[in-house]
Length: 156
Image 1 (cartoon, helix red, strand yellow):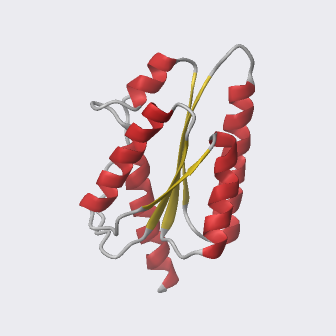
Image 2 (cartoon, one colour):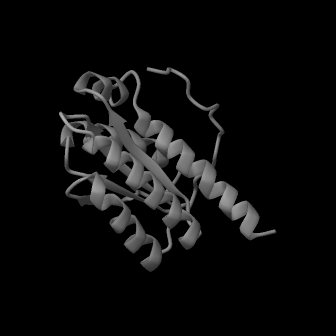
């Protein structure tokens, strides 16, 4: 596992609004990612995030699209954990959701952060959603930074 993380930008999230959409598959792991993402947003001064749950990772793009089209959030974070099984279904879900989320972000002009972990086994998922390393923090940092970027360019 790469231990690299992007450099952290100190972003004042005061008044910023975020939605966190999370799947219920691999719920304990997803809950850990959500908890760390929300704590990071709130520590930056953001409004308490709106949290929505959907059945699985495949449903995340539809939920993100619906929320982006009907509400005003500074960014949307989608969170899921897809663990490989006996088939390549995890690759299909990872590829299709990544493409869909990018399309939604561009079409709706709102940052949509892809927080879907696609891993080969449970150990890899646990290593990315634990207390020592938790990618939920990084998803929230990306959302804060992209929300600030969007506000900067909307005022120019």
